[in-house]
Image (cartoon, rainbow, N blue to C red; front, side, top):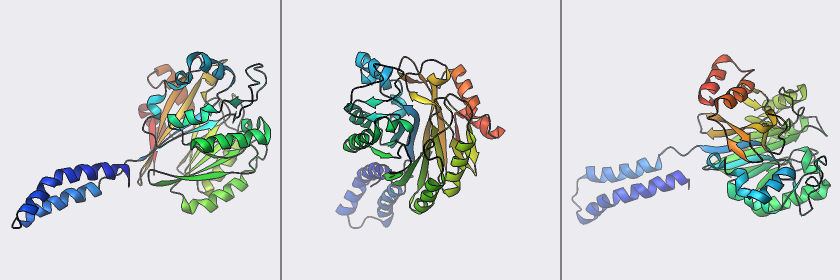
Length: 350
């Protein structure tokens, strides 16, 4: 039973008990009284359900400087500043930028060795934060070969976290889960090894009939560049043509513009969510996207975040940060939608 229906129905029954008591003790009660009791229960079962709520983040990396910081400050310190935006979500969905293995970290010893592995305890820890699904369609899930990739999936499965995508676009393309009575489909595209989006788009078209809401993640583009490439645009358009509702982009490590194509949003890059790339303003400021979906419309709320000393915090009340990130996001949008985002941090599509 939907959680909203269950709560309201329980409350309605409590309200109706006195009425039913009177009905039971006096068979001559007027029919109007009986109608009141029936009306209470009817209103309970027709209450508008709570919308589907999901939060998408950019690149999440838990090795190297982040791991060192966690040893000193504790894991909770990494996410304390974003717990409020995680709360109440049916799912938090990050791009997991690395593997989960028992291997010792090589990047902690040598920061130029860009192979990332996370301590296995992070699988269950992420679950406690509300992470329900992660994208593995990125180049770093291949950092320790097939063994590392399969180890990552095993630990995620054990923690009850669904995953989708692979570093070579050669397996485990998609997953389907039910969230708040909604069938949500996820599919991943990694744009480095096999850059042709056609096989992914074909699978989207096959899956579309059984999906209420369809998300494509896209790990592609040029690192540290504030504009998207032709490859990113071609792939994103192909996925929407095939039937996805939104494209969530990662990999450039900086925020890139939002595009509306056929009324569907393409977030070309959300930038970093948690990383130790403190060498530029752009790599230390990212974007999260909260999705609130009903049968009538989907609202996308844009929530800027800042990585300060390997800890992520929400920065929606920082005018300078807001202005910079939102100006990047809205640079290609129609004036009315851009204004809506700047004024409200959100926009809606049918």
